[in-house]
Length: 114
Length: 112
Image (cartoon, rainbow over all chains, first blue to last red; front, side, top):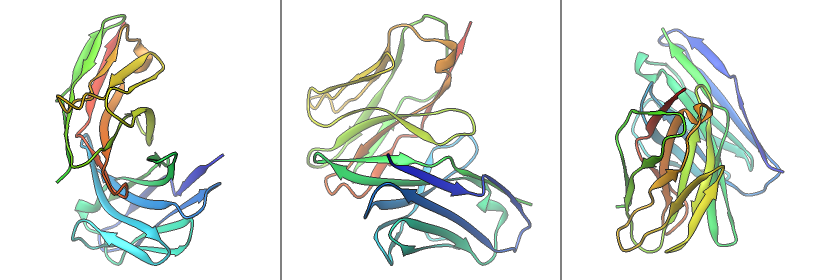
């Protein structure tokens, strides 16, 4: 069966520090991969998605970047964190099955920028 | 573009009450529709789905019917439990299937 891992689970970082969040998927190949951010009590904001290795689509201009160095690995990075980067970061994957593309989420990373 | 509009919360119900959370969508082509549930501090879990008009998705006592004529996918449950307290998201997968569009979420609290 497929599983998705995200780490770390929680992170507290000072303003101006770098960031690296990692997401890996097991049990599937060539998935679409996604990074979302969820501010406290708010909905989901799509940050990036990827349909293949090295292919990244950015949905929102910001100081974040994403990379996909391997088929089932998706990394979210920042060179200098802002206070507004605090939130709950969710990685997700999807594959097409029986003509339908379903999306599945990881457990999330809670990031607090101080 | 594609979008989802979801009933604003928060919703507070007594245990065993009937639940309806409204969801309408705008999309080109024939989207697939989903409901996700998010418990505090966790990621989203797929609750149910429907892939074509008049399909009914169901899981754990929850149901939703894909209504193309009204572009709706309302979530219902006949008798809610305290354990159903969570945030519920309506979503669609567009024609290309690469992007998913989510509603803003509806917070449900069930009190004993």
